[in-house]
Image 1 (cartoon, one colour):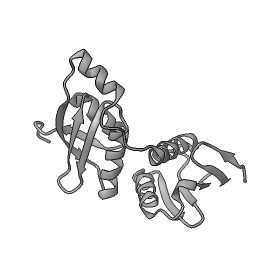
Image 2: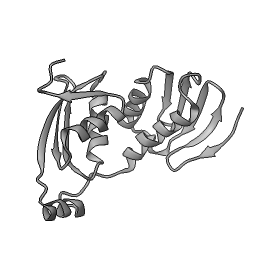
Image 3: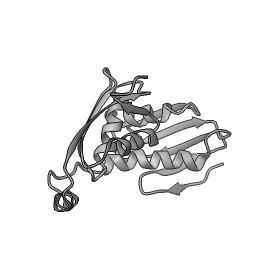
Length: 176
């Protein structure tokens, strides 16, 4: 069945029960973005295959609709692609000024991260974290399975962001 739909980040050109094809303008000749998108999608066990043609901006996704509903898949794709368009934040932001006025102090939080399969996973997590206006800096080390975030969030809030994006995080003080 061919039904053309458009979102802010992509256009659905073909879809069936187990497959969806989208056109993503932000992927044009950008191997890094294509690799990140492919990695993030393939992290889900319910996504069986992802084929990307960066010259045609096309992404073909085979998935299991019994476990992953098409709407949830589209939300995941939309979230990842929104990060591609966002630019890094300025060093001094309005919310940072508000925190200083309220007496909140910037802090560095170090934690463990599990569930990453490659460096693209670490890069994805950095992108997700740094987009939060309460975070000034984020570094994730795939090899050491650790992360450091500087900002105004506490450890529980940072761990929640990581877990909401499909990874596991814990305090370095926690034995696992």
